[in-house]
Length: 140
Image 1 (tube, rainbow, N blue to C red):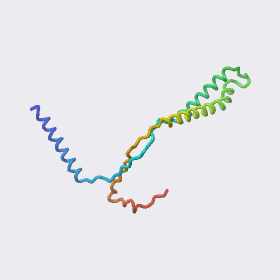
Image 2: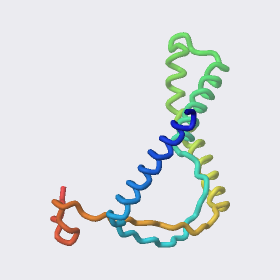
Image 3: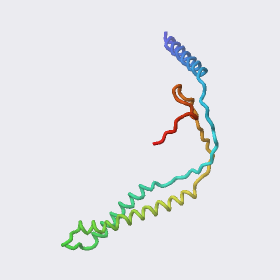
Image 4: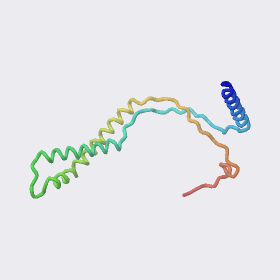
């Protein structure tokens, strides 16, 4: 008795495989082309991350520098920090951008060249779809 579930499962698996083979024999494969292409692989820095971190560092440096000197009581610390942040944040963004550019140049020197296979599959058009040559041009 314990062998009956295993036999039933084996029969079901065989039926599924036979059905898949029949469907695969009836269907035709879409046409595809494989073109070898040489590409460069490298690690590139994410510029937005460097710009945001540069802005944050610029704001932090501005806060520290503003806090080191006594603030004018008539103006207040917040207004003084805001005024100097107008200069500190863009300076931090520039420093972050320069760091990203330097890292980008360094990573481009370490780039490796490999050959990859670019596969383009041309599926068969649907019954109601016109062939690619007769397709109307779509202009937005």
